[in-house]
Image (cartoon, rainbow, N blue to C red; front, top):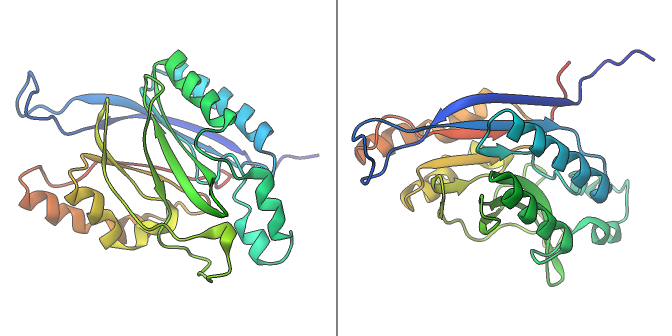
Length: 249
C-alpha cells in the first residue's frame, strides 16, 4: 500500500524570548531551542497516544529542545467532533478524559524531569461531571506550572455538552523559560483571547492546535499584540509556538 501522508513532523528552530530585567545582557534576547511536534493521535487510544508522545518528546530532547509543544487533544485523539456528530456515544468520553492527578499525567511529569525539558500538550480534562479541552505546561522540574481550557469552540456550544465545556478563565503563569500564556487552536481567531495573557504579563504564547495551520488565524488573533507590546515597550512582537496535528503530504 502506498503511503500518501506523513503523520509525524518534528520541526526544531530557535525562538527568542524576551529578556527580563535581571538579564546579564540588557537589550539582548536569550535564545532557546523549541520543538513543534505534529502528529495525528488515534481516537480513544489514550495509552497508545501517550506512548507515541513520549517517544516524540524524547526525540525532541535529542534535537536539543528545551521546550516541546504537541497538538490539541494529543492524548484523547480530539474525539469531541465525532461525539457531536453522533458517530460515538458521549459516554465514551469517560474512556479518555483524565484528572490532573491521573497516573498518565504523572508519567509526563516524570518524563519532563528526566529529560530536563518543558512539555506542552493537549488532553481532555475531567473536573467533576464536566470535561474540558485542556492544554498543560509541565516544567523541566516536573511541576505543572499552568493549564488552560479552550474558550472559543469552532464546533459551537450547547449547555448539554458536558463532554465539551467552555473554558472560563485565562491567566499567564511563571515557568523556567519566562512567563507563559496558552491558547488552543481556534482561540487564536479572537484577538481578545490573546490579549488576556499578554496583559497578565505573558512573555510568550504556546498554541497547541489540532486541524489548522492557517497563518490567517495567527494574523487575526495575534497581530494586535504588536501594538499592545509596543505600548508596553517590550518590542514589536510576541514570540509564539504553534503546533498542529495536520498530516504533511
